[in-house]
Length: 132
Image (cartoon, rainbow, N blue to C red; front, side, top):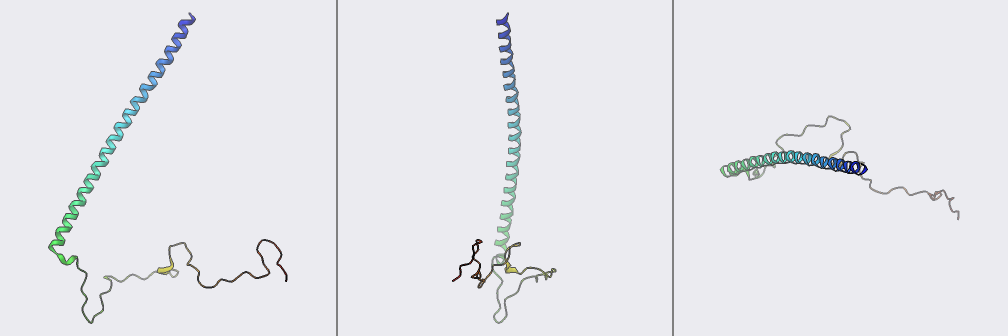
């Protein structure tokens, strides 16, 4: 009787293990199918975008070959200054606007020139100054 009970428990554990593996395999298959569908959709979108870029580039090349002046810079007339920008830049509305060459936002401009030296009576590490 004890042997039969032991064999039944081992069989039940084996059956539960097989069921667990089966459930995990089914989940894995579903997940892989979903990933395959998403990957296929992303590939199709990328192909469509590439096709649009190629069509746009071909249209641009066709226009440039039809109108080659697009590639040339504007010509300068002797005796006249070169043309300025097509549209003047708007003035800044903020009175504290930074200068263009001040560097990235949030940074102080670099210091230049001489910096004051430490006074001779301060050594820096809490030590008393040496008296001569």
